[in-house]
Image (cartoon, rainbow, N blue to C red; front, side, top):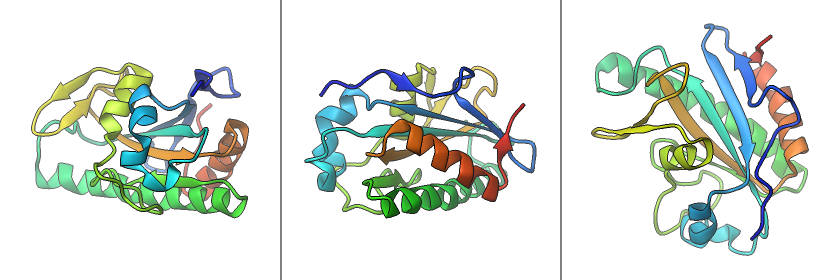
Length: 184
């Protein structure tokens, strides 16, 4: 499969958002990594005949570095997971209503929420490392190092067969209803 590199219609790549708690959110749309292309059927068996699709990376700034485990950090990870799931499901259902195969990956399990799970889970951290080139620290779990937020970053992934400009439009319209506004 030949995919174009990364896509965004704004010159200030990626889409920069800010939440009501002043925590930043970055969203970018990419062609799938080689790993996803090679293992699509094992990760998303329902997508095996899908000729092209896009990977949407959603990075949320965390209140804490996500390197160690503590009750506060676990609660923050759960809060960010829930925020992504609510947002991601809304985006996915709008795109599905328009006829585009779309799914999101549960950041905790690595399995899709709206499709049949495959033989092995998706690895959000590895995909962000492959597509954005962010370093990764291997601890009990793998942690990304964001260029501005350090290890205070929570990665999430949405996949869609919709064209990038439609994905972007839906993301921007859904962001507002989830308390995110474009950062100026």
